[in-house]
Amino acid sequence: MADTPLIELVDIKKQFGPVIALNGVSLSVLPGECHCLLGDNGAGKSTFIKTMAGVHKPTEGTIRIGGQPVVFDSPRDAMEAGVATVYQDLAMIPLMSVTRNFWMGQEPRKQWGPFRFLDMDMASRVTMEEMRRMGIKLREPDQAVGTLSGGERQTVAIARAVYFGAKVLILDEPTSALGVRQTANVLATIDRVRKSGIGVVFITHNVRHALAVGDRFTVLNRGRTLGTASRGELNAEQLQDMMAGGEELAVLSTSLGGTV
Amino acid sequence: MSEQTGLPSGDERVQRQSSLRRAFMRPELGAMAGTVIVFAYFAVVAGGTGMFAADGVMNWGVVSAQFAIIAVGACLLMIAGEFDLSVGSMIGFAGIVIALLSVHLGWPMWAAILAAFAVAMLIGALNGYLVVKTGLPSFIVTLASLYILRGLTIYLAISTTRQTIVGGVREAAQGDWLAPLFGGKVFGFVFTWLADIGWIATFKNGARAGQPVVDGIPMLMIWALALIIFAHVLLTRTRFGNWIYAVGGDARAARYVGVPVNLVKITMFVFTAFCATVFATCQVMEFGSAAADRGLLKEFEAIISVVIGGALLTGGYGSVIGAALGALIFGVVQQGLFFAGVESSLFRVFLGVILLLAVILNTYIRRLITGER
Image: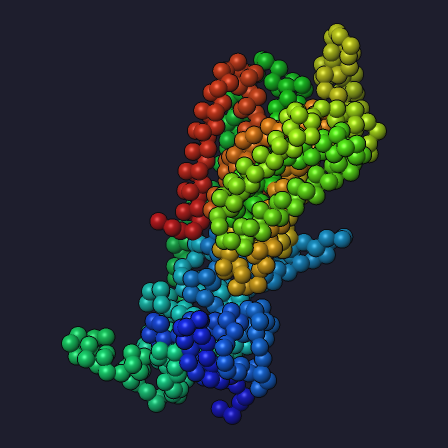
């Protein structure tokens, strides 16, 4: 793992008025790795990925892309730097077709006299092809996203980010609202994306999902990093305990017969 | 985990949808069916009354075109997820601005028309800006504009001319180069020729004896057609059109992929104001006067046309062709009831019923599309 990290966040602090949401979080993503970011609700996962995605500006700390310090003023800046984010429930617009969703914000156009119109033929062709590669069989390119399952929607969003040149792909709880089979599909997609050399940041609070695909694991608790561990250094129980902040869960877990 | 694990086997369930169900997934479907039903009904009820003779067609055609002009603006705005309740007041306001500037202040007509467009579109932009910046529902913001504009219109008219109707516009428009673009008629020669070969009737007596009963296509209809085509192409064939859908479908999701949400919304408010001013200008040129109470309730008629046309009130879904058909249904029924000799107050009953049916149908269509239960 001697590669330069694709993105490196060092000692990020973020304050909203009197509330300290992040108090020193560090994380780096290497090419082709799946870096799992774990943490309980309120641990600061959302704030942290929004900082990475350019939605929030950190109060303190440095972001480096390929070794160079950068400042993201908007989500667009982050996207141009190759950082793409797929949000859990905001990935797709259900009423619009898969093709229109896929190209949203980057619609291909062709010149026609002084006007520029959507190149729908090209858009449809590419969409169908990309969907086939991701293992989604579309009936037709103008099928509404609403007819797809939750897992398929996540997959379409991931395919879109990859197609538009993402080097770092942030997935915000892609599996948290999904059933077993759909989760397996999304995890398989993550694996496929990782193998193409893209760095994946996989946010989850499900330890089993994380262990299934993760190469490294960073645990957030109360706005701080509790450390980063590589695959094999931790087992599920240790991760679980770190997420919950140690003792409290241990007590609970005994009373629940170790089922948490 | 192998690559093949659980590749979506849900597909066969998706594909089992019948073609009938898929045909329902066109926003215009309801309006198309409605159009057929309405025409069939009046062909039976009012077939012999001259409703479908040249002058009868022109009668309901003009009314439908009026609805269509404002429906097109309301349609794009509604797809972008917003309403404009100030359309009716805007019509009255733009008309009075034209009349006051040209008749009262003696501006050339073209300058008065351009000024009215500029002022109206600026107000549209202000509506949009307030909605975007405050995050308030456009329903409330434009309801305020509805009252403010109507009040201002009456005040302007009374304080300058002591009347609410300002006449003399036709005289002021004589020889102007821009006014015929709104008040003129085109293709008159076609109708003269049609009358010559006996396809359309001529006036039997009076000052215009021998002339065809229809002497041209009013510019109002040309505007309606042009706006429908423009808006349809914009919506379905351009990048900006995709953004209109995206902004109405989910503004936050659109923003996260880099769509300039605020710009799109404000532009749609400006376009709605533009359409209202086209309506106002055509009307002022036709009547030769402006009145402070013009355009009353037009905002609702526009919204009803759009909803009959299959757009969702919540945004993100709809079609310009549907809205145009909605306007056609509206116009045909309003005038058709007159031809059929039905009590005209029943028009509103019909309107309410068809609106209700359209909304129920649209909700059903959306469930089909999004798979909601």
